[in-house]
Length: 322
Image (cartoon, rainbow, N blue to C red; front, side):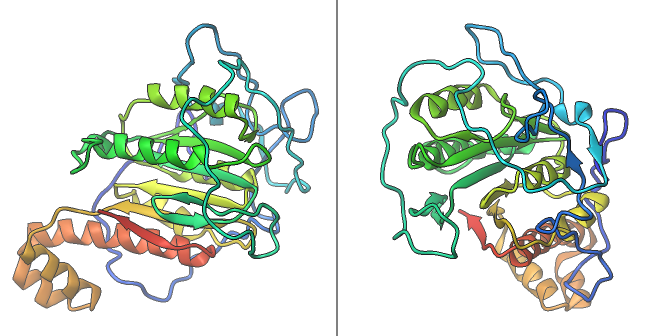
């Protein structure tokens, strides 16, 4: 189930799911491919295309205003192991990154995936050759952040710049923002981490605004179909009931998914009530918090459970950003 042009998921912050329980959720195994929707190649029959061909005008770097998901040809037959064509961006800009490069984090040993150095995002290091960043660009990301970045959105962009700067040219990356729709970077597939590519797409990143609601499903499923070694998935919001179900149903072994959330600003009383809810002491939590605050804490707990479950089900780790 993917959002389409005429059918988007309504954000409903109140949900009855309070604590982890046994569930009949059907997991989607993307490593095997069978039940996952797959986009057909769109670049003249080559085997590496994931997105429609995107031609950007010079001299400005474009910001896609509509999700390219609507123009993808999805089907129920899994594609074969997709080979990726790695090359220069649609319109290369400049000859260098201008932001420096490093050796990354890690010792080159790992889980049989080639790639060597682990690459860090908000302190989370992962080994691999291909990395997809799935990042929240909803309106709430304009929330203030107690750092030089001033906002959560700016803090995330700064960390993305740092992470990309440590990728080697023989590694690959792709960036997917999401609000109420997927906002992919203007490329047909993952690209090599050559300095000119990093410069070009960071220029594009700088122009992406934070606006709209929060629905990560289209971006997450698109990222999984690229079959990267690592997905870094960051959000600061709660999802609708249908979106929660899709995210909870993702379970595969091909791609490691690390999840990131920004820490909520809570009072001591709210922290205490939330802890009671984690212990499934619902009556005590409601008595302590009152109905309105209890409902808000329940939204936070659901979001926490969804993000923790996604990382646990997909070989990754859950990280709270102060």
